[in-house]
Length: 115
Image 1 (cartoon, one colour):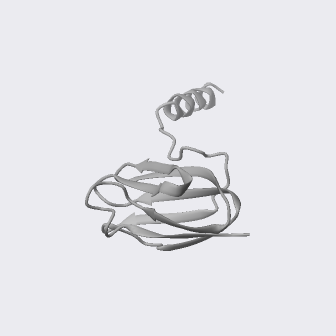
Image 2 (cartoon, helix red, strand yellow):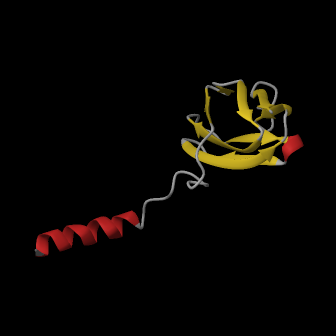
């Protein structure tokens, strides 16, 4: 009836104001990374070669990045937010880090891409 239609309208309008939490929602997430207490909770990541999707959740009260220079990966992750990025990587070992000045020395890890 009219109550159901009104409720549907409210839910539809409300959904227009909800910001998406991920940049690439269509891609399945291969790797989950958490940034908290000025560090990455996971410092060794392992993935198969090809397209890799990484989802970063930032629990800190400042911005972080997920950066891999050799793969041209540079994702900004706002405070208390979640972002995803997909990239292609050949087999190898790569260093990931936070590129915010002062963070890179303590916020880093290794991505191992297997064949």
